[in-house]
Amino acid sequence: MNASAAAPREGVDWARVRADFPLLARMVHGKPLVYFDSANTGQKPLAVIEAVDGFYRRHNANVSRAVHALGAEATEAYEGARAKLAGHLDVRAEDLVLTSGTTFALNLVAYSWALPRLGPGDAILLTRMEHHANIVPWQLVAARTGATIKVAELLPDGSLDLDGLQAAMTPDVKLLGVTHVSNVLGTVNPVREICRMARKRGIATVVDGSQALPHMAVDIPAIGCDFYAFTGHKMCGPTGTGGLWARREHLQAMPPFLGGGEMIREVRFDGTVYADPPHRFEAGTPNIAGHVGLGAAVDYLDAIGMDAVAARERELHAHLEEEMRKVDGLRIVGEAPGKAAVTSFLVEGAHAHDLATLLDLEGVAVRSGHHCAHPLMHFYGVPATCRASLAFYNTHAEVEAFAAALRKVRNLLA
Ligand code: PMP
Image (cartoon, rainbow, N blue to C red; front, top):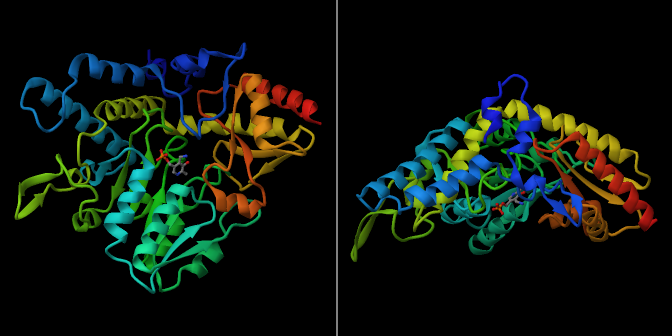
């Protein structure tokens, strides 16, 4: 178990790391599984599976309520996970709200921070490459406040047009939503530079870190944003986990988003005193076991080292794109320099869904569709793409199997 933790940090034994992921040994349609859909959700190492299992077997109780031993253990495990995540992101645990994922985190900013502050004449600036989770909450806020949405456009290679972005930072803009890494294109946005530009103009920044945390070391204070949202299930953790980091002054000023148990200090019918952040924003029984699992995921990733993860993925991804470029009629969508290990593609004459279905029959799991990014699909003038997304647990042999499957499918469709 957790082979990588035992391996020296210099020179990770990637075969042992892969063996930590039981699902990757599966067969699909009689073929060895090639899982190239980690941008959708990541696979889980035994360390995470066992942490969740162990919590339910030995420690299960509700948090923050019971004084008995199990209650104390559950609370310690849950708060321990928050502390591990805070260490991973270089932030203070008390500034980290645990949520069901990025979607909840972004909605929390929208409803608790933006809704009371924005009004007619204000604008929310978003980029063309945002996931729907970083578009729709702002549209809901805009509809209720009279604020408008502005869009920062892309260059044809799928990188942000930074001059255009800067020009769009007009005095009416109160908030900028930007993804750290595009889930479709793999573009890594220079969020540090972007947040510096925004801060100079008094614009608050919300960074969607969903696709960054699985691939790289992220130092939130160094980015200089106001809010950073992330999801646990793409970084080896269970589904229904994640969080929102926010500057303390924002958290202190924000009213609760949801009301209920766990988020109060005292409730009276003539007025309720809320708990301090982060608990003020965690109404109801949280996903305790899930976050315990996410804490184990953070330990697992830290044992390998995010720099080693990033280097491994760079190597695998370079191999992947080299193989893809050899396939006739294949077009890579998004060619920004320094991409994360995500490649969207199209094959001449084939619909993305047909391609993904035929690849599945070869044991290869890739995603096809709009990837919750309709405005980005409109930019490229396509309804859908196929997307191969890698993680450190993939192998060069899988890249070759994928390329062989792609050639076979291409010939079938030609
Ligand atoms: N933003 C991006 C960039 C994503 O890739 C995703 C997940 N596909 C989300 C937000 C939403 O994450 P979740 O569904 O875990 O809340």
